[in-house]
Length: 226
Ligand code: ADP
Image (tube, rainbow, N blue to C red):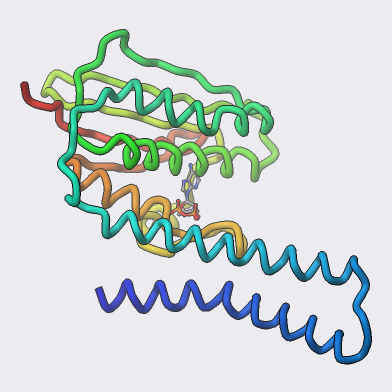
């Protein structure tokens, strides 16, 4: 807990510092006269963006603490995929990313919390989108989401992209809290570590590998009992 608390304090300090600087600048400008509307809106936008960033970090941290407060229920993995895509589908269309779905018609249920499951899929889909958008992509812009019902009674949910994959020295660290390769202000580095925690609490595992065209994340979960 000490380590997490220190990291959170550190992460929240960054947006707070930016806010402090922006307000300090405005106050200084005002002591010399009335600043222009352009100047003010630029600074206020900055403050607004940074409060949003702080709120995102806090929201993610709540996920860590939400464990076991409510009983998990039986949920349909295909529903998780569809709800997550309802939330982010429009963004993917705007980014001109094709989504390929491979879902079984009937799928055994798993145990968990719908919102948390959606959160994990949203994290994976957002990362896939970011990876694809960050490269000049000759091989197409596609995310494939699939569900596989395995013989050993586990359910595998996979998210595969054409975003170029993850470098070897990066892939071993991606599930660490606050590890990010994204620009300052863009990534919190919490998506995958929170996802890892949620899937662990559901009795499953999450892993990542490179496919050649991009990255493939596979979530493996036990089927719910009768
Ligand atoms: P964030 O997205 O805020 O950086 P995450 O924990 O979700 O935090 O991801 C950590 C890092 O893992 C990312 O910064 C990126 O370097 C890498 N990563 C995650 N998903 C992918 C992907 N689909 N393709 C390439 N790199 C990825």
